[in-house]
Image (cartoon, rainbow, N blue to C red; front, side, top):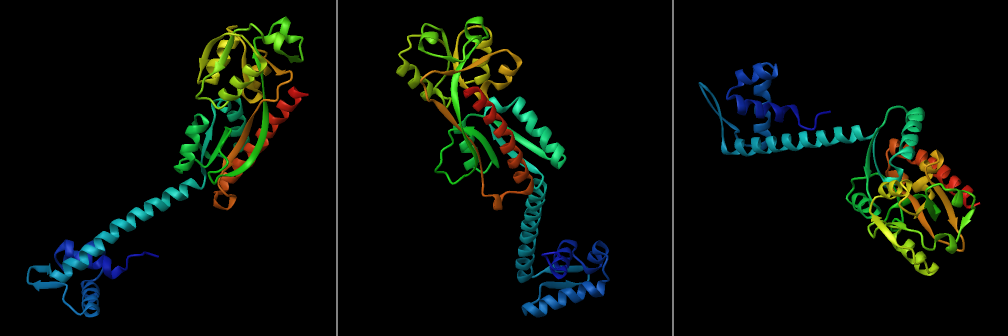
Length: 306
């Protein structure tokens, strides 16, 4: 049902056309029907809207006011309908924020499972650190966020949460491959490749190194988990990351992940979003698949801890 009445539409057409005859040609209505709309509105408002003359019709001051309101409403009506169309499109559109460590194998698994269970759904993916993802979520730019150490006081709904231990990550060598756990003696004197302070695990790793009394030298720091892993693969040194960060490389045999003896250090992994009642069906479906996939990551981490 149109929000703008036919009479209002006709009045605007007559004003822009300058005559009932020309307006009749544009809207495919009989001139008598158009004239009736004009007369009815003039009767309702109690004042003429047009000055009639042999060559056409001109707006009165009251007519100009009415037509201005009609045209403003037409602009607002079109803007409203455009926004509704965008929202309709978003019913099958989800905006996901993830950390860098989930941008490869994890994301591919989620996307494949989403297609299998629900068909083609558009997913916009933003890859960033926790602080940036929080800002995007607060700005309404994301529907779901998978990240470490999300603040718990921002009004987001936590759909999943798991503690993932931080372990030592190194290039496979006979020395480390035979060990189940690594301790201070194994790490003392090793060159280290560390996360810089822009990454959420920086403070935890720094505190652990101090508690262990390691005098190992940090030869490199980075805000990129991928860069850290690449340096470790090349043999530059040992790093400290979670199982979620390195599971793909460990599976391929490029890296080793070992628990650290006597240390209870971890990252809190969460899936955050809105209340399910405020989520589209597509967002709810993706959230379920994300939870299932994160549970497999958690299970892998627990097996390594065991």
